[in-house]
Amino acid sequence: MEPAAFRYSPSIPGISSLTDHPQQTSPYLVSNGNPNLKVSEYYNYQLSGSYTHKKLSTTLMLSCLNTRNPATTDLRYLGNGLFLSQSMNYDTFRRSSGNLYVKLNDIAGFGASLNISLEHYNTKLKTEWAHSLTAISGSLSLWWNKGPVTISYWRKLPGKYLSGQVVGKNENGDMLQVEYRPNKHWSIGASWMYMFETRGTQYPSWNYSAINPSIKDRYIKDNANMVVFSASYSADFGSIFRSGRRTLNNSDTGSSLLKM
Image (tube, rainbow, N blue to C red; front, side, top):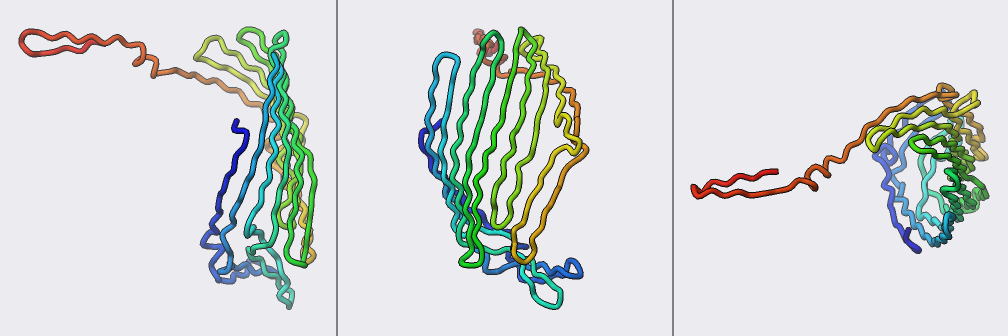
């Protein structure tokens, strides 16, 4: 991992977001593009450090994301019971975060890792609105290995995020897995995912717009208590060519023969 990094990435609006063509999508909602929508530019600064001692390894990473011309979907009241939904740029999107990763490996076959993140968000549009959010998230992994058998458990601790005026919660998740590797080619496994989650994957969000505040409780119920069986086979075909022995035999008649 690089101790320091800088990344720049622009996001160009799609044609539908730029096209000025109002469309009434419901009795009370009009959707339209915004020809004045600007390219969003993301500036991401990262600083990290690692420490390893015997079977313990840790990594700390600090990052700051500043966005020029961030974009969001805005809702405005037109009158006569109609609302306008339109993409727009706002002034400020800033995310500061700290991430700590700790791993303890191979203690009588046991291992564990913990990932914790602390994030702070700021968004603002002139004097119309301003929001901030501080959130904690993480994940935990435990495993035990004995010969060809590995038993592992993973759980995600979802945190919240802020974009424009919308606060959302990241996807939840957990998994109990048993894997059997009889040799270097075959892997056979069984996984139990979203255990005891009657609603499966969940994506709740809260919109703090002064014009149209709302709450969404989206989830995928079919994922609840999902059991997955898997079998995979892998082979390194490159080793065949790397280990081949090449000999060249020439005869007096001018012909040659290449043997592998």
